[in-house]
Amino acid sequence: MEIDVLILGEGATDVGIPNGFGQWEKGCIMILIEKINEQVTLNYIPVQKKSLPTTLPKKDQGKFRGHGKNIQKLVIYSHLKKIAHDIVVYYGDTDKESGANNSEIQARKASKQAYEQAHEALDFFNKQGFAIIPLRMLESWLLGDPVAFEKTFGRQIELPSTPELLWGNKNDPESQYPKHVLDKTLSSLGSTSNRQVFCELVQNINLDKLYKQCPISFPPFFDRAKNCLCDQTGE
Picture 1 (tube, rainbow, N blue to C red):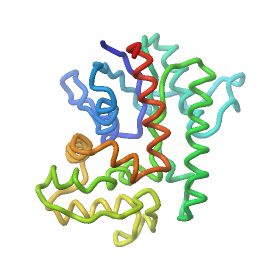
Picture 2 (cartoon, one colour):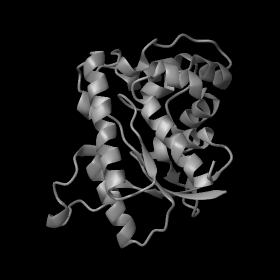
Picture 3 (cartoon, rainbow, N blue to C red):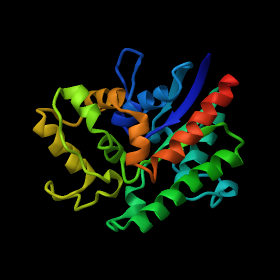
Picture 4 (cartoon, rainbow, N blue to C red):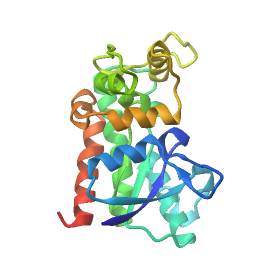
């Protein structure tokens, strides 16, 4: 079964980029979604944030907050452009909401609020779909399964035990800021952070392991995505 997926993301590493030949090079989030239900074919309709309206009509202002507002803009854009689709997928992260506070209580609160914002908008517009909002960012999830690194690079490594709670000074390469931790990990393996490497890691990642290692922000995505894709196939 084929499903048309309207998807909005942050950038090339998560939802991909156009290759200049009329095709779209997938980002790792697309591959992650495909791993949830391999019985369906997902036809992605990617939308770049710069294409969305920067302002909303007065009648539509103030209805949603944060991630919900982004989904609102995406739905309005799809109506204006008459983009036919079966489900809506939104990717964002919570690094701005979570700030530098590294407590688990605050992290859980920020993640819960982020998903509530997104789900509220999806439900309001009666859209089948789901949100993907890692705490604190995509790199946190990528650090969730050491076996994925072993399969990708052929070497065993140790990773942080609670990758979702990593935080540090963005401007200090030696801090525990998730992007820096992943950069250092990949550097020790002779690699760098880029779309292709992220896609390979996700292809090798174990979803059950990620569910356990990232228990705050991964389950809300996985559970709703699994149900949504099953609903589409009638399973």
